[in-house]
Image 1 (tube, one colour):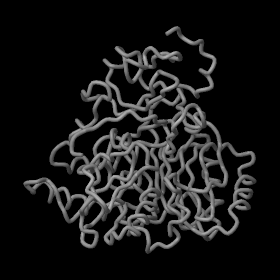
Image 2 (cartoon, rainbow, N blue to C red):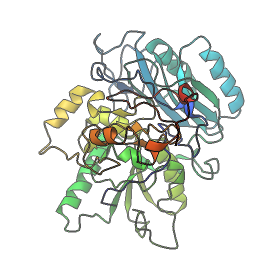
Image 3 (cartoon, one colour):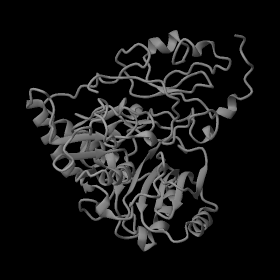
Length: 432
């Protein structure tokens, strides 16, 4: 897996890629107004509040205390994106959903908020006032009082088309579901590493690999628990590209009968090998580490808060490319997460990191922009990286076959995004 591989799955801008079109597509298709010409002007912040006040933070590993300047705090009407999750027992999740829906009445919040007996998983956008009001209300419940909340800027309004707040059997989509997993038992999940600890471990692993003739450290595996298309725009240095384009089908470390070349956990010593796992926000690692624990892996570690928390705390040291996010923005540069940390970190690098990993899905050449686009074929909608030449030659499609499809959308340039699918449902069918 050291070489770049490409596949052609049906992928949507979602953490729940679907296998058919167009069911549920309205929730995930991009907003054409979401451009990022001003992406560095608003700073995100990641915190773990110990009090209800938003005017001051306490400075610890997960809790920050600092007075923010007026430039760092958006006006109440500025839009932000909020992410948090917590595995905790909820006796009556349906009643909990009703309470949350009642609180949301009259508030301008869009996104995905799911609850069940195992806890809550929330990703949503809204004006700062409404978005933070919900966070504060949730944190009034002792079960969620110290939940790690991650916030990033949304420069052009909502990044989700509507609010989906409901009971859902699985907080994370995985084949076979996750209700049977012991997620409420912290000892069955991986040990969380703070961003600073992760950075130290990452540097040690890469230093060992760089000095090794075979460029491999058998005593430690850096495992990217995301989708392949997420790796394509950015990842930690030394992490292999996941050989899946849908997390629900991930099967790392689950084959006992044979060694699979694409499985970085195949044939490793489960008792002695350190497994360093990371994803975007942490929840997929918590889920998958419980699976690996049941498979007999002993030394499991996760990046607390995921890559987004790391970029906010440590800058892009050890990270290459952008960070894929599951909303209309799709891709965020590391500088989005606290530019002053990024600037300080960049001065400490001995050499610039190589971004040549990002390849055009069609011709394999290096792409200049780390941002996916959707295939112009409405009935394909593949999410892929593409160079300008191939965009022009194939009229925004992912392959020559799609260029002769019956429903083609216009070619979009720059940061423009296609509207929700129903805006195109009445397209006249092209003659074949």
